[in-house]
Image (cartoon, rainbow, N blue to C red; front, side):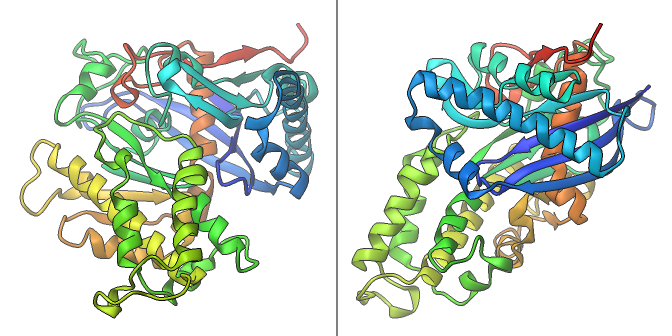
Length: 421
């Protein structure tokens, strides 16, 4: 059966709503390959947020309970309207079977078993008049998991030609694929009777975690120069690394935590950015080429971008090294073949300067940094949201406990029937 699904993704960078219409079909296991899913990215687009919506979504944490719920419903209706617009613009009337919405994360307090994404699924379903799956993270968090990352189930089932995955969105996260040659069944178990959690728990298992804030911080800094983002990393490339600031960033406690672990958006906006801006105002750092002399004066935007780009590259490098070291069969030169190919997606994959820094940092690991076509770069998360929703519709596990640290794999998502009986 071919599932015809729309996936919706609103990332922490607040650049817009990603919409992907995809065809998904299950591929059974063979002697040559494990079970997986084939996909076709039929149509996709990003609808930029207006300044009004960007401001309202960004201010969600400060609202009263009533105002938050009202925004939740209003944003759900907005999502439904965007689905109808997308369907109309692409001639998809009467073709979409299911809409899967990630929503927009406002609260992520996993220590208190709570995560909240704006975008009421009932309002979306009623507006678009189609069946909807939403609230994809809540079940995992209720089971003691991080609720993030949730895309590894899609990486495992859709993109089996890669062994490592890096998403450079508002937050950077990294995944390492599970053991090859084991056939995962529809319920999350394997042909040999091993659960997905057990499969991923060993040294060759599927693990993933949030690395560091990425585009959310870079975009905020680029906005100081009147730009929505640093196109190609050109501003960063013109700056210099501030060694002291880089050391402070790399010394933040989160980076010493083991995985599974995840980041809330506020780590970037309330911890990282204030640290950078303090150095920009006070000139407390030291540029590398000044050999220990005080930088004197405030750090420029270009220097801040250069330093933070280096921070991202170093933290991703550290994360990838830890994953390579934990992979069975990894020798001194790292991984080879499929296992040594890292797929890089998300808006940051367009930042050619950052990609260059990553390749430099990982040069001695044997890891090949692969940037795919722009469709997969920009819409991989929306694509995987669609798959997660299909798995929920089929009542199959769609979140891996090995990734999130939950007590078990789970079937995440609330179903809203928007179609008439």
